[in-house]
Length: 201
Image (tube, rainbow, N blue to C red; front, top):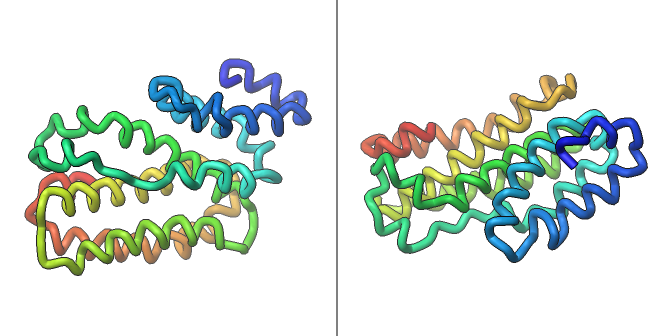
């Protein structure tokens, strides 16, 4: 599908069934881990290629995989040194999940609307998650790793947003990301001793 995306653009009627397949159990919702992770990457590549045609169904597609945008940190990883350079090598799922956050950013930008609910809802969820941990007294490895992952996720939403060729994104981008920017800066102040947080920011 990605390889022949130009054909999809020539036959827009094929887009809906193709995207339905991609977000279904044979694609990004596959129960086979190796299939699922590969599909997350390919899904983002496909959306970049067909972004001019996906706008009318952008919100529907985004809603179809919002359940995959939940960040879970395995205990085995959180127990490791969060400032280890090799730490990300152990969190393969999250590394690939970032492609989904990029996809979400691109779809939000493709909405071409002053209705920010989809984008605001996603970013507000991430913001609230960081805020709750910034206010905690403890700075344990689990807290730092979760904050690191959320900052990375917000960054990849912005990356996908920036990959969009939709010009209107420039009009509402600053408004959409201003709150997230402030939250990230507060997290940096709170966890400034952590190199992984500094790197994520």
